[in-house]
Image 1 (cartoon, rainbow, N blue to C red):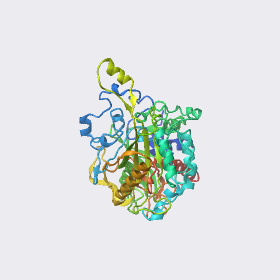
Image 2: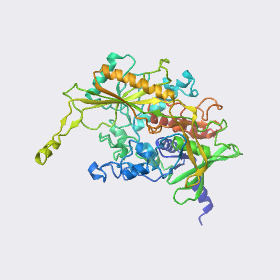
Image 3: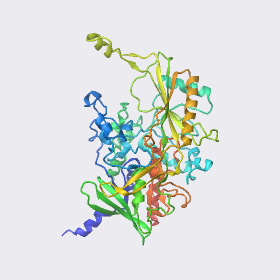
Length: 571
């Protein structure tokens, strides 16, 4: 006769628990299962299977009911989400709608989420740049935030480890501000982008235009065939989900890889209410999970717990994990949990035209942009604002359709377009914001969601430093465009509210001192070392680079350390 008690114990006990299946949750799952740990991965959203569940991947705009536009009703029902550039008809099913998971904006902030297998790794921008010591040393130099407990040398081998697995297209540019990595063949600059690259190199000693580094497979195809992934086809429909796996996402790469080990248990519709802390053992022992569909509660137990729910949700979970030992949230002895939130400032852009290079044109849909690494306040403070900004750069020659006439003439004109006399160029700023104690997330004392979890309150806003940075960006890029011979130069401040960069970071920051930080250099909670936080919540500062590569490298490094400590019986 089956011993139901023993079976039940096996069902709820694991070596490790990972909360979240996004960029870092997928990496934690891969690393833990490869190292032989029986691992439970919890996803609060629905199951989404690679290839099978990309319903719009091959559709043309005319095959979509509204030609890939949002209806007025959908916009009215989603005033927050509809501000996101990626929220269009073909991808709407991948995003959390405003009414489904509400939160409270003490200051206007757009919190963009995706609750399904892979999280937002399906819809991300795929730009992957390493940090340098200029980034890790930023807080120590200017005294804002706290010093990082690590430097570039600590993360460099893990950057390489991650890059080799995910596939990164890029050039070896030899920049100390943007270290080179393990690259597949680079994508090409357009003619006008290459022209601008040459002009900037000739006119400025401290500035470079390079091809952006992106998580797309552009070579070494045999290696990625082992993951079941193919090469990028330059469709630039990535955020619909790529059936070929041409770009990296958790649900096309790390989650299937972890599943193949036989050590992964993956549960969906698993809303983690809180982490269970044992006062006697002085350790976290498990998690309390609400079934998102049925509503019943189950407790799961493990020796180590990885919190990778996404920056704000990781903060929410720790704040809601209260016990006699931690009445203000797990690990929150210093009262800093949820504070020092930061993001990237994407408000500013510059556009122009260029009437040269008539013999060239653009073809195809390259899924990446050129990139201008940070050049302000790098080696010394030279402006009236702190830190700096990077920028994208894009240049293309538009196709022009003659819509005059009708019948055969109109049809012939539409089938044989011409190219514009001028190139269109644009640059968008990605500015580093400064983490401040006044920028925080917290729990509302009264309002709860449908599962009884307190709603998150967000109070994050721009400051004078951000405004000064925007002004400098306009001045510098206006000058650069003018010296390059561009015309009709226009600057634009979108005044978009924070959050639409979708790079929220902080709240559970790393540091050297338990008095001023929550995590140590291995991403462990100072006060509860068997709980590891390695998603965006762990960030001490934001730099100007897209953050996902750093999240993944931190996660792989944190798993390696945690498993070694577990085997030494230190956890």
